[in-house]
Length: 100
Image 1 (tube, one colour):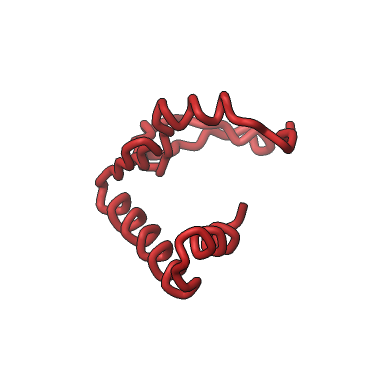
Image 2 (spheres, rainbow, N blue to C red):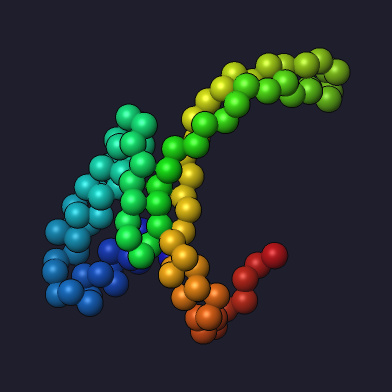
């Protein structure tokens, strides 16, 4: 499902204009992005958490040149679904098969 499809479905279910729904969805994503850039985690009860994870400094190998590279510590965005959300997905009725 794409962002446009999500916006269309929310608009249909709520009766709110697509333009207003799009602005709201865009504002939500902007708030999540700016919060995570500043190092804050975002918790949505019953859905999940958008968290900033710290990756430690490590040494990697460039196989083609046979050299070692040092990857400095850095932060990456991550999503951890809520337990209730995971349980609903597990027990849900899947009409399409997942691609492996």
